[in-house]
Amino acid sequence: MRTLLGYAVIAVVAFFAIKVVLGLVGVVIGLFWTLLWLAGAGFLVYLVLKVVSPVAAGRVHDAITGKRSNSD
Figure 1 (cartoon, helix red, strand yellow):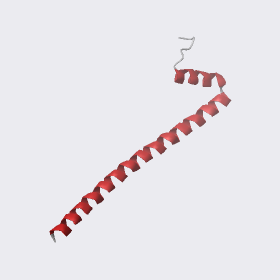
Figure 2 (cartoon, rainbow, N blue to C red; figure 1 turned 135 degrees about the vertical axis):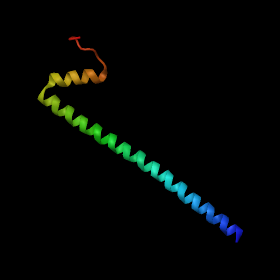
Figure 3 (cartoon, one colour; figure 1 turned 120 degrees about the horizontal axis):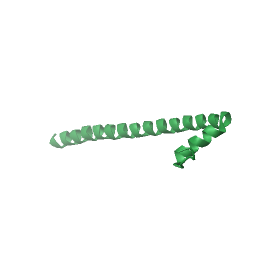
Figure 4 (cartoon, rainbow, N blue to C red; figure 1 turned 30 degrees about the horizontal axis):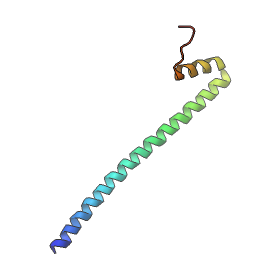
């Protein structure tokens, strides 16, 4: 009976440990997909800006890459 109780305690602890680990993995996957979605949305905004105003898109590109503009 004592051994059975020990196995039951180990099973309960393992169940909660797996639940916590999988919960953290879910959070990481959720953050990854959110970041991927935001990057895609930013890329689409940049493409529209490049079609509508290529000069402004060039300034955005320079700001992202860290190049200084001549107007400073």
